[in-house]
Amino acid sequence: MALSQKQLGEKIGLEESASARISRYESGIHEPAVQTARELADALNVPLSYLYCDNDHLAEIICLAGGLSDEQLQELLRLVKEINARKTY
Image (cartoon, rainbow, N blue to C red):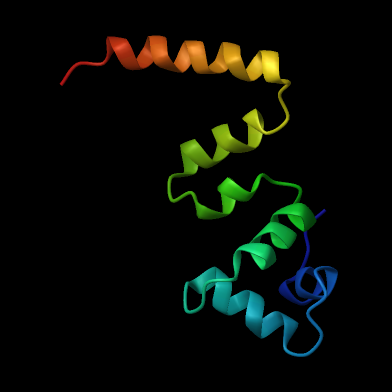
């Protein structure tokens, strides 16, 4: 479900200027406090780290990994380390 900036702001408890505040966060004019970012991540159903990721591929990996069990995360980490060990410079 897509949320408008106003709906998202209201969902995390922003009263006045909800749309404007979310817009300033999205554009990088202002950075939300960590607690606000955590509330935004919860409202968007994404891990907090997703909001700080500046690479689309990594952001998608973060979202997908956020739903894994601890055992699955350990397996993912093993695979990433294996891939990383094969890279050439």
